[in-house]
Length: 62
Image 1 (spheres, helix red, strand yellow):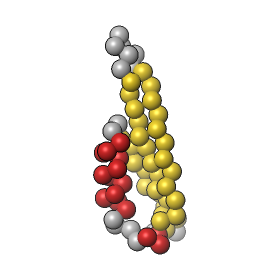
Image 2: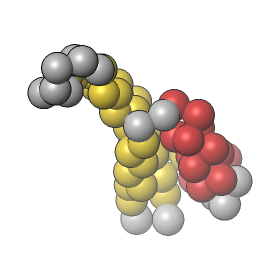
Image 3: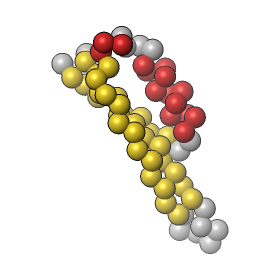
Image 4: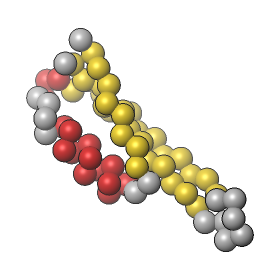
């Protein structure tokens, strides 16, 4: 059976740690694909600070 695991973090290092922790739990032959995305937007405040969203989806065989 094919399954997915979705990760979403504001900091790329947090995403990396979380994904590596999950990937250690599955065998290499279970991994099908990894999709990665980065989104950025400005806050609706005066300082216009950028907000980042780092996300990834791991597709694997259960």
